[in-house]
Image (tube, rainbow, N blue to C red; front, side):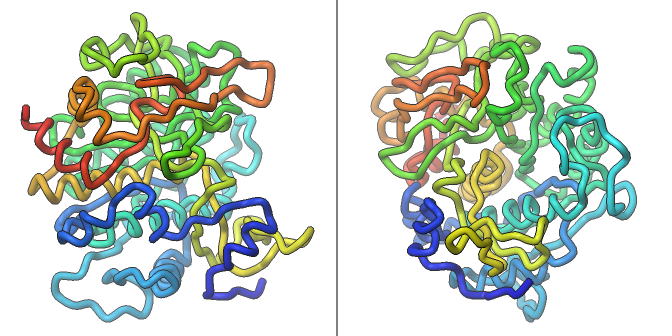
Length: 418
């Protein structure tokens, strides 16, 4: 596979029916620029990104990505001379070195056990988190088993997150994986995996997780909640394209839990017009860019399948560049934003869910801090019905997407009771 270190032009993306977002266009869409201009870029904070296997070329690929888009390099990138004050990229491989394949799985998602297939997820997570918060340190935490809809991998991944919390290695944890509640054998087996989230909340560490994709909706919309739904973790994003014209994405998750009761912060005042939340937890809390048709450009020199995410006519463009969406994109971007808030706070924010809903309960603050997404739905491309986006909170886009320059300082104040 030949590779080019020059990103594809938008004309090439358009020929494939896509709108490829660069880091700069994403920052502009969510009003991150004023924060960076003020020196708020995540410096002094560490984002732990948890993924299966890792990528053998991540240090190299991150450097190519940064040079291509003019992003400040990190100490730990291949070929970069480290200097005092530089953010660092490092890797932590827990529970042994990755195998080529995980043990056999009963997952209904073929390919999730393949190490090479996870390399693209790793590149997406690391590069987009760094692009959103170029001053933050990034710690890539890997385990030698894949997450496959709850049937394997989760115990080791939760143990890895517990290790990060216990050893004070990060102020933000990003996990671009989730599973439907129905994928677990019982509610108890699900509850037994919450210990890392509880530890994180008590230690001032914020955990973010992707919402479950619409194709994993099981048979009951009430059971479509990602395993990350609990009091310590605000599930991530489900959005079509950045900006005021955003639309709820059919590939996203969302709905009402059949295991977790509605938390206190969802029992308060919601924005006017919000969907009713009954006795059980509603997700997601927040959203951001996710649809593959408006994805982010990432660089990977270790192709997961020998094909690029873009096509030149009917032929894959083997350029090393991929245009990637999904809720896996939104989660590390949100982690970058939270690291900026942690910098403003001079330390980790911990559990931010109550603060998000507190801000949204004030009509003026809600209008200033969030972009309310009111159209679209997350109905799967099957017979499983989903939900529709609407005014205020809804089980497709949550409270909406961030106006970062407004939301992040207000979030810090709200965490402290302001």
